[in-house]
Amino acid sequence: MAFGFSRKRISGKTGSAVQHLTHDVAGRTLSLRIAENPRARRLTLRIKPGATGLSVTTPVGISMLEVERFLFRNRDWLEEKLGKLPERPVVRPGIKIPIRGVNHEIVHEPRRGVTEAVRTGDGAQLIVRGERIHLPRRIADYLKKEAKAEIGELVARHTDTVGRPAKSIRYKDTTSRWGSCSSEGNLSFSWRIMMAPKPVINYLVAHEVAHLVHMNHGKDFWALCEELCPDTERCRAWLKKNGTALQAIGF
Image 1: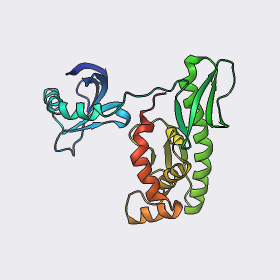
Image 2: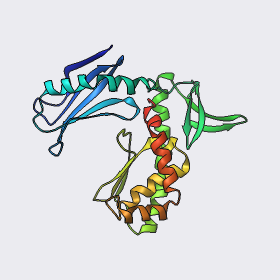
Image 3: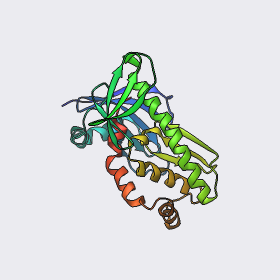
């Protein structure tokens, strides 16, 4: 049984409210984020989407020894959950990744050129050109470019409908959420959403634009979300079921 806790600090300062460590469990070395929360009444443990790491939330004043004991008590639960999840797949030639919900086989061509998605007689391919070592980054860059184009148009359409402009649109690679809307009107999206089907992409944008009007998840918010995207319930369920797999892909 592989289970261990590393006190070696990756970042952060002694006494800080957030610490970044590593934790060995089930044959994996995972990042471990330990964060104090004044509102927390007990220790909580969460596996990040795609099993990319662990997160422990603690009440203020909890010692590292108590955290270690907490992780030890939950070792069986962790090993069971992690055992059901595959190792994080990394993009490489020959495997398939979805683009707008359609599986594309990754094809590498060493000559210089742009990355492009093409349809073939029996499927679809994502042709990635250039040095092999840069393939993951080139695919990520391609998805970011597609996200900026498609999401930008959807934001313009939905903000015009609600009569509230977005202050800015940002694209990130987040593992905790697919999108966000700040009180200042700044919208953020994970470019990974471009791997989801087009209706799901539209739902995500509609969801965040609806927050420009309602900064909550109340009845009025969901009514507006449904108005902007009639497929809200179906798309929301799809993202809940399949989102972790998209977050697990390594670039």
